[in-house]
Length: 263
View 1 (cartoon, rainbow, N blue to C red):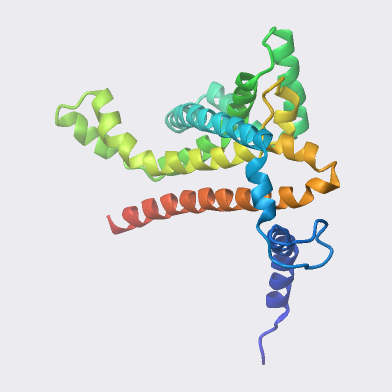
View 2 (view 1 turned 90 degrees about the horizontal axis):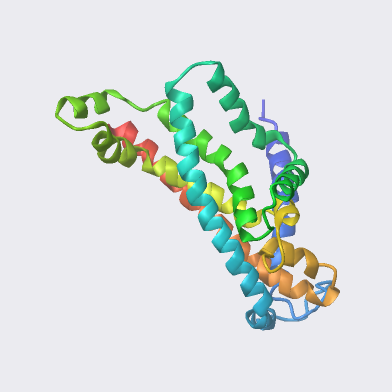
C-alpha cells in the first residue's frame, strides 16, 4: 500500500500560502515596474531611493533605540520574573504568573489603549520613552517564558557546590548561574528585539511627536501608490534582519541544548 501524498501536498500548499507573497515582495523590490504588475527588468533604483529617504532612516534609528532598550529592560525584568516564578510557590506567585502571561493573550489594541490612558492620566508626555516602556511591557513575557524553560532543567546543585567552596550568593550567581543561563537570556532578548522592531499597534497609540518608528512610517507610506517600490525594498531589508535575529536566537538555544546533552 502506497503512502498517501496528501500530507506532503497540504504542507507544500501551506508553505506556498505563507511564503509566496514574501517571495513576490522581494522580487518586486528589484523590479523596474512601479506597480509590480509585470516584470520590466532588474533594477536597484528603489534601494537607491530608499537610501535617500532621511525620514525612513530616522524612523529606523528610533526603532533600533526602542528595540535595544526594550530588549535590555525585558531581559532584566524577565529574568528576575522567571527566577521568582521558578523558586517560589504562593498565591502571590500565581497572580504574578497571570500578569506575566496576560500580554501574550491580550489583544494589542487593548494594550495600546490602556497604556495610552495610563500615560495620559499620570501626565507622562508621549515620546520614545513611552514607546520603550510599552514595548518592555509585552516583551517581558517572552523573555520570562524562555528563561523559565531553561530553569526547569537547571541543576542548582552546582550553585550549592560553589557555595560550599566559599563563593557568596552574588559570586555564585554571577560566575555560575548567569553564564549558564546566558544563552537562554540572550535568546529571549533577541526575540524581544524582533517583536519590538516589528510592533505597530501598541506603538501607534503611545508614540508622540517626532517619535515615529519604522512600522508607523511604513503605514503612512502605504497610502501613496508611488511609495510601493520603496516599501518593497525596505521590507526586504527588514526581512533579512528579522530572519537573522530569529536564526541567532535559535542557534543560541540549540547550542545550549547541545552542551547540556554532551554533559
